[in-house]
Length: 525
Length: 106
Image (cartoon, rainbow over all chains, first blue to last red; front, side, top):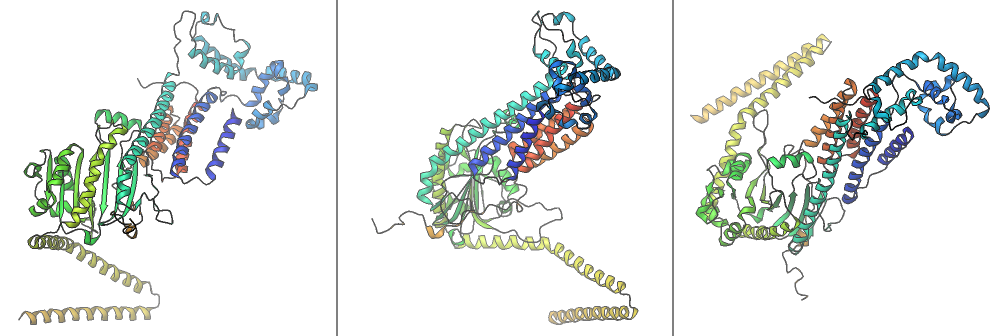
């Protein structure tokens, strides 16, 4: 048993030290193999650990036990060197150094040792008897009396374990004391089963989505599928698997946009805990599409439409929506959309421009699948929460179109449901072309520019105090460092000279400030 | 037929390579579950080993399984394997030291 464990561990470590394959497909199968192997190890290890001897024994005495039975006469090496090397006890047992000539002698020595070790054995006997006193002697009617094997703890433990699974003559199951362990192992097996099933389901859903959308994407983009690692910009034609529940697809090479990143964010079907949590609170699979645009592809506006909940959340979380769309979300009914959708916009003209008849048609027909649609030229992601007040720099912005769609089925999706998302992808393509053509009129443009200037000014004001404080601390740090340098100078002459130099510098600074103040006063006058 | 190969909206000259979004920029968007579970698993397995508590060791095994299931494919498998091995060794050691079955808390 130990040998097999050791061999297992050796194989494992050699496997790990060899370079792992980088291909996504084989990596995932490797991962499931890695999952199964520890489980197997665990199942192997448990009976081994239960069959182990008591701490009171060392292996020398155990071999003495074996020497009782003539079958084990070959393994009698009851001398002190076997006691000194307990770990190699299995190999000697397996590969017997046959010493048949020394049988009688060894038996004699064994008996002597046995007598001498009576005290040592008493403990085990009383222990064994305690275990057996729990059971009725009648229960062992049909079984062989374990008389000789009473002295062998290995056999005791295994029969004890086996007894848990056997029933008596009266067909009443014995009180099995290991039921918690069995429960645990069953739970682990259930987790592994759920992992495999969930992973496969997610993989099938992703493949189904890609198969139904492949044609549309290939007819619109020159590069469909890229993991960023290959030398040439060649379409890989498949999804990047980030996780067991997240798949990415990057498409690029089209007029009007830089590129499009599609993320299939499925529910965590591979995690049993998540599956149980979803029974309480159902969650949808989501498809998130992020289209990044060049500067010339989009005019300056910020707009969002989606479910009321999503709009409320995004207005609080998103940097650009909170700054530019400060009004509460308006109901979509005004523009012919279903009641459940709300609109956040920078100005009314933008909404009129975006919500043309075709868009309204798309959105109305698929309102149940739309979570949010967000067009912005000032997109910088969610608000960054910093502990020490505001960040000192304006966050970088990028012209982006974001779409979040819910897959129908509320978690219980089938691969066929992926086809229903195809019209939404058509809407995405239509939006890209539309945004390119959408231009604000002069008034709108002025308003938009004013808004952006206002936001920047606010930001600078808020950070003004902070920037001043930062500059002040920097100046103080410099002074302190200089003072330390002066103090650490051992030569008194040098010290004096440095001090004088510092004083002169300070004087100059004060004079400069005074000059500036005078100049300002003169100018004011 | 031969006139315009680029009849569709595709433009080969406008291809931009994929750049995986840097995780330092948005640590809040990343799922922290695998890291927490890894840490929990290690803590429980150390508790199980030191304090000889069987239930700690079993929970450690569960934690490392959960961490594995939620982990990203870019994560180091060696880290996963080491936490697996640690939790399994915690279980084995607890049973070696005390082969009695685990008693339920009720």
